[in-house]
Image 1 (cartoon, each protein chain N blue to C red):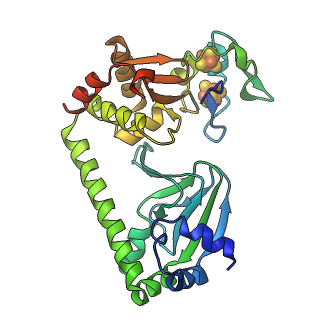
Image 2 (image 1 turned 135 degrees about the horizontal axis):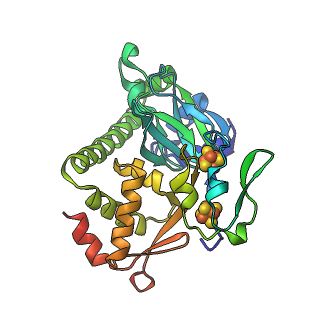
Length: 223
Length: 72
Ligand code: SF4
Ligand code: SF4
């Protein structure tokens, strides 16, 4: 492990505040991997053998419905972990919960599941950080479940647009990706965006959607 | 993001049926060696006809989502 690996590993939220001694133990089992855009990294249902940490680029976490509809669960950016939850399940249940593909060229650090579990047993500060990380994930997923069951597509789309507006580095989105993200289908997203535009809430020009009436969008998101 | 974005074509899903080429009102997309390509990027009006028509959802337009300038 080089000094460079230590610097890269510090970018991972789970490792950022670890003592030098614990980081050294992490670095001893973590291996860098460079993955080209569009490469499949994990398949849902396969045995979970490795935990990954993104240090450069973006990955898409998704699941496929029986009809092949893609539900994007998350875009993971540098600093985030993938496959942490299944890695913590009992051996016979430890299967990848979602599929993961590289959205851009990506650099990951891979830690074999067995080594990661061993680290958690030996390093309480890493265990506490992992618990906080998982608690934040549970909170996010609870919100998503509430959104899907309680809100209309219009409200979910409004909320999504507001989130994107305040994103630090806004990513370009296709209507299909937005649909997958909010649990809908492309034609419904396209129609709802047209409705918002006709009502003066959004302005759509070529490749840019501008939130013209933020207050109205906030009201829609609350419905 | 001030680049001139163009429809993205996922050649893994595309079946080369040519429907996007037939329907594109500006002839911005054409089959090159049997595969669809944006051959006249400056002519693409970003009308989404290709996206609406593609039976495989293989061609799509991308959008950035931004606040109105005075809300920045
Ligand atoms: S967006 Fe419209 S103009 Fe551009 S390639 Fe598709 S059909 Fe042609
Ligand atoms: S309509 Fe779709 S599947 Fe057919 S050539 Fe165009 S991109 Fe490919």
